[in-house]
Amino acid sequence: MHTIDTVVIGGGVSGLIYARERALKGDQVLVVEAQDNVGGAVWSHTLEGIEANTGAEAFAIGRGAMLGLVKDLGLEDRVVAPATGSSFIVGDERAYASPRNAVLGMPAKPLAKDVRDALGFWGAVRAWRERFVPAKRATGESVTVAEFVRARYGKAVLVRLVAPIIRGVHSADPDKLELRAVMPQLAERVRELGSARRAVEEILERRGVRSSSGSAVHSLTPSMAELPKALARDIEAHGGRIFTHTPVLGLRASSEDRTWIITAATQAAAFTREFKARTLVIATGPEFARHLLSAPAPAIANLIPVAPATPVRLATLVLDNPELNAKPRGNGVLVDPASTTIRAKAMTHASAKWEHIHRAAEASKPGRNVVRLSYSPDPEGDLPEPEQFPWLAIDDAAAIFGMKASDLNVANWALTDWTGTMRQSGPGHTAALETLARALETQTRGADAPLPHLELTGAWRAGNGLEAITRFTRELASR
Image 1 (cartoon, rainbow, N blue to C red):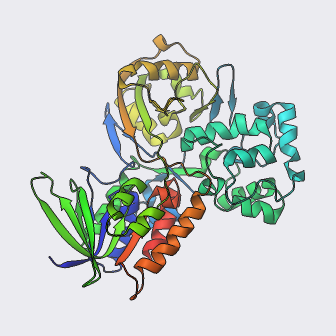
Image 2: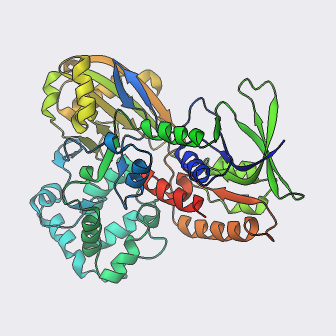
Image 3: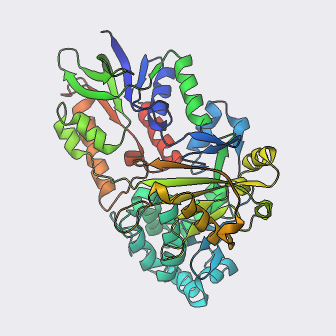
């Protein structure tokens, strides 16, 4: 058993990015993944000849970390922007356009017409008064999204704009989600600039986007699955290896030569094999990371914060309804959390949002459209049963479009479940991560450290979204 420079447990995007960075620096790299393909929640399927995303459909522009990675991978010619930037928020009684010039639903121009249409006159006035709220109010380290928005912008902004985004995009409750987990620098910038309005303006200026939130994302053609495919190609081109169908069973640390020994099952699970690594990278969910480290590194395991995952069920519908080419709801909708008639939390009109999907749908059959509805657990913690589909998705799509369910002609459909991707970071999560980082530094780095070199990455540590994951993991791997 020879010693490998870097072994990465987990072949999602986080693990692949780390492995690629080290392979480019000359490390001998091995990635072990339990599933039958790499990429995790970034993959695709084909319905009626149309390649559609089964998980992440886009990446935020953010600070440009993902754009930089895409360029390094040679995928610039596959980058596409949304065909339309408009989107809607739909409830039981009304539908209104998501305001332009907003970040996470917080408006930079509270008295703009689209904000007044969404909030009503007095709700917009209350949001405008944010500039007079003391800079220190609701900007503490553990403040939740709801506490921040309610105190600074008022209840209307929270209920009508922010809550649908937090629920639809982050699959979270704004009352339980730490602000720093989704926008790490926002509270600090509010204190420095004097108001959230100025901080939001700064974010929009940095993005170079002065339109709707939808324009702040890009995607890849024919699907986001090109990202993990390109990462895997680069790893293998630089001598790295990727083993799928290889679940890790256990770890132990060797004090004799300061290495990690990883025990994994083979594809057929008929026997096990061991790998020895100078550096171990665990790029999995926090639960599995805690489990693997509980015996060889209990002090580290106990510091990994609990970041519960909200399961998401995605229903993709291929619809033969030419009238939907008019994009009646723009690129899609976020559903008012108070809605009692629509069970979905969001719907993306994929063939309206992305020109390449529209072209593929038209090539499949003229007038064909693709929509994707997402579902989170109900208050009792249950997802809608698979037996309810496709009928539940058809009913919801019809309600969102303002049509009858009988008017929708379904050519094909599919369900995809994600159980561990959307991590919920409650109050204190960021502080816990800082404590974990200090422990990793003292216990696993340096010649005198008691454990071999260990790194932890993933959405639970980097933050949800490909931009956050890419920025964090590339920085981690560059050490």
